Image (cartoon, rainbow, N blue to C red; front, side):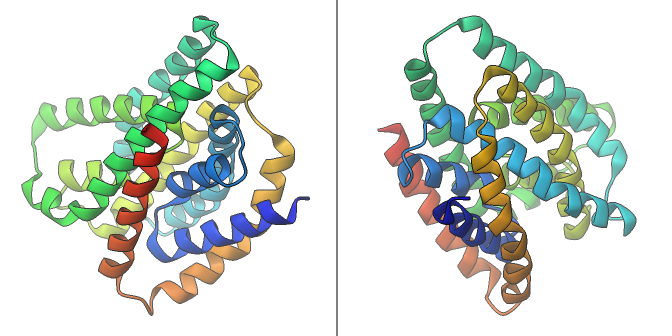
Length: 251
């Protein structure tokens, strides 16, 4: 096990525990920029990492009644086919590993900047939201498709962007239900996208094990510490960091 990877898992796990977001949006850039791992490998590995770490959270939220399964179904109706299609497109393009990594790196940068905007303006977006009837169902499926494509290409968006989508479309949903529903939807999405990347050969299972070794205690530690730090301060710091990282990856 590489100690640096395990330490990174501990660090990112702590941030996720404190803020509820930041898994893919911090882990993938860290692997690319600090450890020099190819973006395609970083994305594929992080997707399976996210599926495993969020499965426990989804189970807990489900038992406590914090998951709106009908919304999970609508999101999955768009995201799962989009994830599969994205993997097939990446495979069908038959481009070399360097070009693939460049494409994923650019997509990752865009996703990080979108995530930072979502974090900064989450409360305002929630106030603007609200639909009714068939419109909200169609919008939920469409939003799921967007998330499926973005998450498969960058491993970013299942957390922060998914939460903002739910806040906008379902403003009357309680915050804890938004979190639980978003986590429950992220598990099958990241699992299918991650398995697709594994089929493409863009998952490093040794790296995956090292990250998990640190992240699981990190999430627990961060959850204990998070209640002592103002959420807005954490959100602002995280958003600023994501803008800088996203700009570096894009340019």
